[in-house]
Image (cartoon, rainbow, N blue to C red; front, top):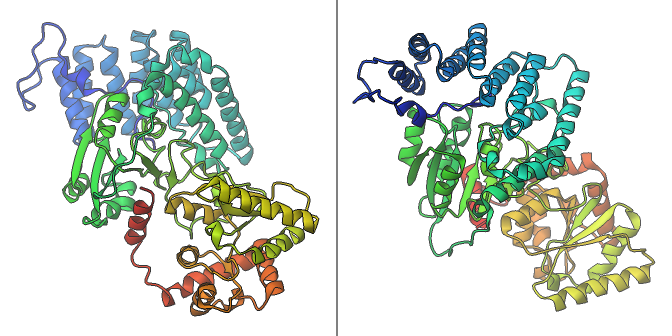
Length: 567
């Protein structure tokens, strides 16, 4: 469930600022005397998990100050959290009647109504918020992107998804209006939490929403999107984990070991808790980390506090679970930023460089569902030769051309050389060879820039088959491919340097990927790329046989290597 509803925030600063002429209690255990005291007591009780007692305290605050929309709103939210929805609706409706010009009050009511699947009433409350303040970007977003928790039918899913897409288009079309007052974005609390539950590919919708937020953030706080230079690798890698859910919940269960078990001789671990209160699990994680901070304040204040810690890598375990997480993901707070599957959907953000997932959980072609990837064609079969260009002997070229001739969907993927001169000669060589073979150009050649090792593995993960060049086979490259379960085809050379991949494949027990001759090489590559069932079967056997080749260690070791590779 979303961490907090949209609308007026329960702000400790607001509660601890006593009304004019009224003293602030000297201690937290001072007996409440005024409505403000009771509201402050309820705030503390809520934060300590005493929901029932907090309701009692806020009820007393409303009795003492029945004309306070603020107290009625806080009470309504507590009642909703306790699933006492009829009472919550009455309290929030009372708040709206007291201060109908406050859009945040209508939005708090809308959120509560949406949780009950009363979507017509919720949207109407959003429209009252817009009427109260036509310049409220939060009201506009809430109305445009409202989604129900439960659908009445499969067709209902389609209708709401279409409404979401149309609402996003309206927001994007009105971007210039919001850019005239961009600071409003710093209070946006919409996460699209329910969108992934529709079962569709959300990459385009998530990317559109993130780009919309990013454009406004770029105008409101451009320094929070500025590139950050990487630090020297002569020191330990500083890794930050930022979430409001690093506590006793699913996120805490999933990612506790990432924090506790990263080897401290190589990493410094910083835990950054946002929008939440530490519990016993949080305190244990704090003790296990090298640095812990419970961050509070406005979005930009929290963001700058994170940026000031000069992290090398910032990991967002659960973008989309908490109200501000989509905003933080649209900023540049560390040189390298990663998301994980605490909320298993792409962030859609161009500021998130990597998405940590699990190969066994991902379907074929999974990268097309993530923005955190490279721009390789999703509708082609990708034959990757991931080696330095000087390793690719010209006698390998005819094998490339045969693949292009026999697979009209084939695209050959290489990594560009470090110098333009090397790249130009290599491309010219391939173009001349294709002309000689009678292959019409159709963008069959893709050259990617040199990337980090983690990005390199990401490229491999979206390709269909790895091609070993003749005469000089892969070493570490082949190990990387096999570790990821990716099939590669090789033709052993007459010297040792051309036989490394063949030895690896035979050790694992997938001898059929070792070609007998050039014709067999092409046939194997075509079958792997074109027969997904065969490819998956081979991948499974590679993974099963990998322990005969290398000791993969625990998942934390894999995470550690990935984090080292992307810095």
